[in-house]
Structure formats: structure tokens, C-alpha cells
Image (cartoon, rainbow, N blue to C red; front, side, top):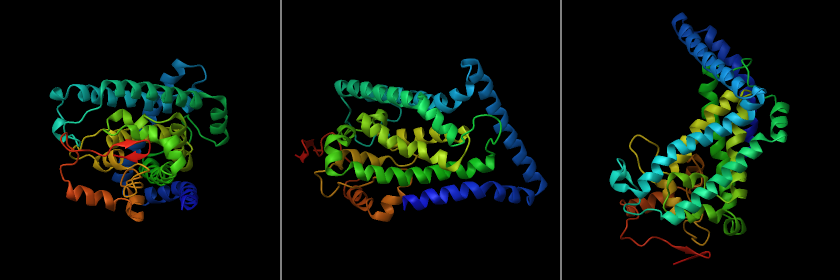
Length: 323
């Protein structure tokens, strides 16, 4: 299935632009004018990015390909998560406290300190890999551009970003299921599941090997669907909002539900036969719906509409066993 997805993405990427040009030519003049204005806005915005990055580093092409996507995602990560960390320790000042999934349950200061340290190590590792010469050369060999040539149009972005979401969901589902097998779970992935009360930084709290392995599901999609780094940057923004929302611990109205992944952290570990493989995907959980790994979670929420509360005994995992 994954290979079919990759082949489909490459085929769509090759055929999309001629198809979009045909649709554009057949559109009414007013619509073409709106499309032209939107494309000019994209081009003008990227021209500003090029001007700013040229002031930061002499080799601005390298900066845009290797530094910008990862640096942008890390910056956005902390912008989103510093407030969530504050709310974990000062819930009475939290305007979204009523939407908390695990009512009255919070991570301890010691646990958060260790999580922050682990996240910083992982993000440093990500930046080192992203900035290394091998990655730069690989992107050049793949034909990824960062200038004004081949910049994606609005029409390109309207299919490329959803395609990234679909590809990420498929790759992440497969990687995540692999990480829930016995040896990989107990030796690597269990670090991520030590976060039983999800807060935003849980999204980057991994064993470093797990972090790098899971990152393949993030970096591959934009390379498959586009030959310009602008798509990568926009995709990284979308991804960072999605993964932070999934781990934030709040069921915020008009946002994608975080209940399913919160349940994954509180109940899904290797020794739990019933919930060992549940809600393994992302976004709309398409693959979980196809493989039936969402149904046990839906059934649990139907029986426990209030979720895990402070007075309720939550599952506890110790050395691969459940108390």
C-alpha cells in the first residue's frame, strides 16, 4: 500500500501542473484574475523570504533548503507549547481548562523538566541532520529548488498540502505500528508513552532513534509531491499544528479531536492486548478506520464519556505490565 501511495504521488506530481493549466485556461476571466492575484501574492511573499535569507547567510540557497524548514518548525513548536506548559502548572489561569480531556490530571514538574530536556536533544539532533552536507547534497540531487523558478502556484499548493497529509498519515501509521511491536516498544517507543497525560511537548518527547525514524514520515511527503521548498515549509507549519493539537490534552471546539490520541497515550502499550494497536494514525485516522483500530477507542469513549478523571484509576504501565 505504501509503495502504491508513493507511485501515485509521483504520478500526480508529474501530471498536476498541465492539468491545472488546462483548468485555468478554461476558467472565466474573473476566476483567472483571482488566481493570478493569489499566485502573485505567493511569489511576492517568497521574494521577501529570499531577500531576508540572503541577509542571514551568504549561501541563501543552502539556508532555505536545510535550515529554514526545520528552524521554522522548531520555532513554531515552542510558540505553541510554552503557553500549554504554563497552563499545566497554573490551571486556574487557563482559559481552555474546561476543555481538558483528563480532568484534574497534570504532569509533574520533574516529568516536564525531563521532557523538555529530551525535546531539546531531539530538536538539536534534527537540526544537525538537516544542516549536514549529506542532506544538502541529497536535496540538490532530488532537484529541490528554493528560488523563484518553479515556485508552486496556489493551485499546486491546494493539492500538494492535502497530499502531504494523506502520505504522512499512511507512512506514520506503518511506522507507528512497527514501533508497537514487542522489542521496539520496550526498548525505544516506550519513552514516548511515558507521557500518559498528554501536553503539547509530548509530540516531540521520543527516544532519539524513535524521533529520527518517525521524522521520515514528515520529511518524505513534500519531497514526493513538490520540487520546491516552499511546499515543505507550509507543510511543516500544518504538521506542527496537527501534532501539537493531537498531544495538547484539550478537546477544543472547531479543532480536530484530540481525544483519540490522548487515549492512545493513556491506554495503548504493548502489554495491553485490547488496546495495543489503537488510533495509530494522524489527521482523519483514515487507516485506523480501515483496519478497525479506532473502533475499540470509540467503544471506550461511549462507555466513559467523561474520560479519565482525577478520581478515576488510570491504567499504569510498569516494566511492560499493567497494574
